[in-house]
Image (cartoon, rainbow, N blue to C red):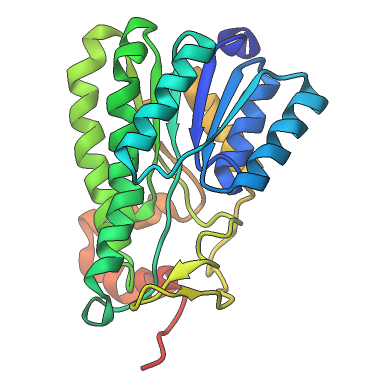
Length: 272
């Protein structure tokens, strides 16, 4: 039944070449969906497209797109609609992070984080919304535990995730009567390169190895959970063995969260 639900449906995945985005593209392709991958990496785009086509006989459209660029998003979504006829599922997955204290973080880092994480999702959703309404589709947004609980040294990242919740929880109310579902997903620690490639305060890349304080999920496991959430058209999906504690403590026992869990979630002590 789950496979039948997405058979021949058009699924757009931003940041679809690596990590959770790649796993999601693979999972929906396995369910018979037609896949559009948006990413800024040219060679991985072509290679992943060929992999999906050769191994799964999937219909795949690979588009180079920086989601921070509204015009590029408009062109990409138009290309998807022209090629496949519409959009059934939009997965706003593309994202970047940073690791730096607020006082040491350049304005350009805040702007870049918001441009990708928040405005990237906004851009793609605006341009796909008409088609999503016509097809009574779904919007899936990759948030984080930081969407409801603060994490040290990630003020820009946390702000972008809070903004996503504000935007898409409001949009959900506006489009629910038109048959469109909006699902916010908050994964916990996942084995992707996002933290390995975190920006630092001056905008350069910090490739330091970070040891996660809790169990780390695989992108495939996270993608499976998101896929099942999409089948059930859930509103909110909170994943991993840490998120429910972070959410509960930060909301009802903020001092306990700050003294016990926050140092563990932060994952690193910055050098000064």
